[in-house]
Image 1 (tube, rainbow, N blue to C red):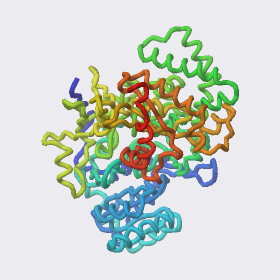
Image 2: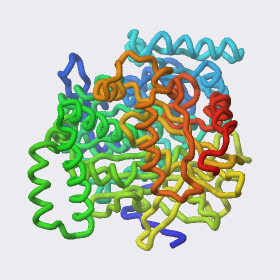
Image 3: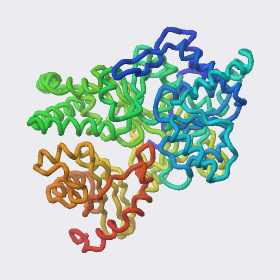
Image 4: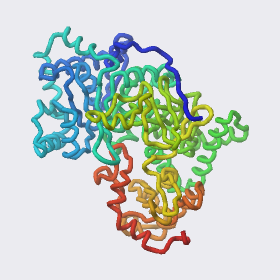
Length: 608
């Protein structure tokens, strides 16, 4: 199949905008809890739709009183927290446009966004964020902002106080209601694995119609007023931002975790019913549980339980689960699966995975323990989801069907094209790039390679620009190998290399979180420096076995023939990864050029 579309399931009025999602919630049930904030560890205070709505309107009027006009751009530079969404809606209620800025952004990155978007004012979580913004403006000699309000230093009360000097309620209502589906809601700058970030212009329609179409599907059984989630991935990223808006539209209860180290405790006290995360989070949950079991002498039980969960999920997907498998599954549910669910709060039944391929193995494992991961696909340019698996419409290993109002097509060279209610207006100030990316028929070239099966389910094969062509002319999609190697408990990241080289090789990094437990089990001093571990025989043997297993899924010409373990992990801070945890391939290749050359300076492994 070359093309598949899903018709809209509802008609969304043209005069709606994102603020109407909140207005509908307040009208439907003002007492319904939309958010919860953690005031002390483990203690969450609920915030009703009415309370959230009142504060949003006060802040919006305060923004207007402080000088923010309709159409102005207001930036938010903060970690994931309740105030992020509070301010997002306040900016929209003021008739303004939100500009997200990753909290890890450098002054030069901030300067580019401030200048390109024409930011008039900014909210900063801390004084350190404020210093970055001020440094950016000073270094690039940009016009001074109207204000940089601090979230943690009573800055929001300063804005609330300005409401006394703001426009009338009638004018504020006009500001809120003026925007329609076609109007600009936000400019999200791609974190960018290459080049300067591009500003994706997303409309109120992108968020509002995509939300309402999504909730009208089977996903409405997962995200609804009885559901809840803890948000922990960056709200500056389109994935979390869309889910945040979706939750408001659904009336779901949302908590936030800024520090990932507190996530397990927060999940157990909050007890969410669904989660959203990137694949790396699910890998860490699996690997952490495996290492814990091995440390307690129960590694064999874990392996058998994991195998049973995977087989149970596969059998259920095929439509028939043998009685013997049902019995084994019930036994492991008490021995193992229940404990894993408890680690996630005990109430999670579904999760949404995006930002990269999850893999069929993990998908079946989690489905087998009672947590159905609905893998989806999208980009910043598509307001996150173009396609997603849904309850009753799931094929594990794929990223699902297009959401209502969306369509996907596979180009002649295998590239995925997308269009529909999800697609952005274009790139801010870059008509040239917009014309290159979106054709006359409205199809957006995603840059990803994929396949559609006979039922319209999409499978991602890798990035078009990341296809490696070896010296012998063999085309290799690195994602399949990288994902399998990275799934190992000891491995943090894997980067496959080999462009114009005689064979495929890889750079591998070690996972600082799981490594100590593995070292202890293997009789290696946990304080051994990573530089030594990178050459330790047992570590090398383990990584080699992981690579050997991954190589079984590809041809010999595509297999990893050699590898090196780096002395440090790839990080956002080093510029080697984006804030959404995608590897910047060109940066890593440049930074580890010497190590890569070392691989190829030796004789071809296995004679290539």
